[in-house]
Length: 401
Image (tube, rainbow, N blue to C red):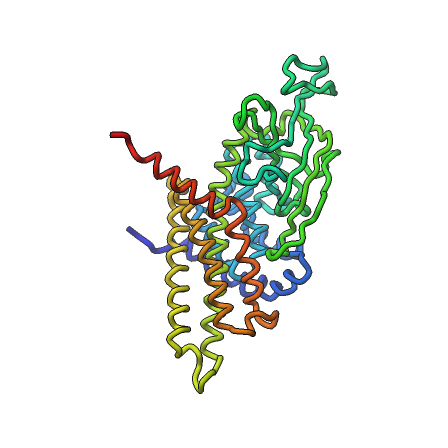
């Protein structure tokens, strides 16, 4: 078993670490205060090939492996979690499904520009009544037809100009939803088939009938805007159907598996930033006539943080490695996401505790890390959903006597 990084992976680590230190970290406080990641910073990230890291070079991407992706995500997240959210959404939730399920025309039309960072994408799945319960979504995509209505009352054709789809409904908690030009949307095309009646569509933001609703005020990750998207009689050409009709649930679940690897890497980055700040502060802070780093209580917290971060990192690398090898990685992605996100929250708590009252103020970055870490146990599958997924996969492996 080889736990050493390849030369390419080391290069990505050095490149992104320096970029995060020189360009991202100096802006992180302002990004949190203003709730905006500057477009110029996203352009620089795109210039490094990080907006489509694993997308093949023929489609404008970096052509690197998933381990390179998680390394880059960790380094950027350690400097600014908001910025890393924009990166992971574009990579995991947009480029990945278009590459895996898109037609050649869709790849040339959308993926090449997304992977280069020329445009950004977002992923619209969650609804007011459908969070973890994906089959409960109500957004509908009804076929239009010049001839009129169909005989099926559950999926009536809409009389229109051609053979596209008419999209109606709304989506909540869409990260990148304000700045993105392309949206991956999931909608019901045949309600009689349950989750097999859900389809996926590539929707351009300029489509008539698509508008931005509520912009959420959030606890953390403030630089990555989270919005409601409203679809009112949006006409989607049939060429924008992603995969086959009825493939939507499968596409969503498989995409979230990749997304969970990205969030695991983000969580490791946040946790590492907490540890770095805590150790630096503990050496400088003097109480009882000596640096608090010499106190056993502080040393125990630092040791536990370091141990758990390394375990989270290895779980994340393992999930990424298995994906690269073409192996099934559903369980491993959920394990990595669950453990890493819980670790990020524990490390944020301990690091703030080490800082004492100062950690509770905006004079130190710990209060931002604390806020940013919280969402990692929620988006792209809560910790509870990860536990259900892990148990489900383990039980599948058991053969009856």
